[in-house]
Image 1 (tube, rainbow, N blue to C red):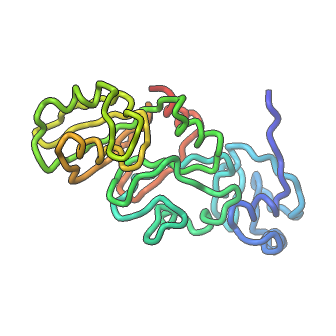
Image 2: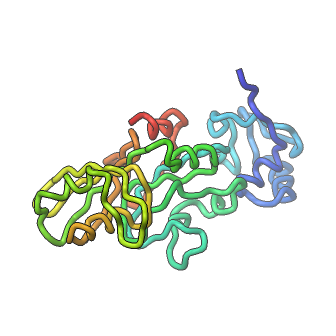
Amino acid sequence: MSKTPTMRLDRLLSNLGYGSRKEMHGLVAAGRIVLDGVALSDAGARIAIGADLPERMLVMGRPVDPPPPMVIMMHKPLGVVCSHKEYGDRVYDLLPPRWRVRDPALSTVGRLDKETSGLLLITDNGDFLHRVISPRRHVKKSYIADLDRPLEGHEGEIFAAGTLMLEGEEKPLLPATLEPLGERQARLIIEEGRYHQVRRMFAAVGNHVAALHRDRIGGLSLPDDLAVGDYRVLPAETAELVFAD
């Protein structure tokens, strides 16, 4: 059985984005850090960092933010980007401001382009991130595409063949599954994450994606009660559903 890691209180809270270590000493001196109902008096005390910490510790009267490793599910809206560096509104701006300076930093698990909505995972867990995006894992991703033109009926066979070449590439796509949902709407399930892959696949068969939404990654689906722009922290066992499909 693995031992629960510990960290100095001032360093822990600084890493979670609450402020500098000096500022954490001030909060402790003011009695604003409470653990198991008792105000802490030593900013250098070592604290066990378990998943239950938000249930045990209060910072300025509110539950402490989840410690690493953390996985966030977000219902990404249109018009925001997934990059830390790209210009424009970012998915990170939808999170609490202090989460932007957490250490380790939060990163999106893959990306959705600015004009794609839906299920997005964000994490500070590098191992989890790389397991999800690793080509060897073959984690399936489900997209619902609204199309400019009606489906012609041959698209599913082309996508499933494993021979489709995207323009400018030298390696064919892995087989993908098309499920027609209407005359101009379809679900496409892919195992890769090439640049603008879904849009380029439909372009390759003479159609254009007018709107794109991701509703599932592996065995993890976007819940109906998660509103656009909202997010929630996932329990570890829920995050692992990504690998269950």
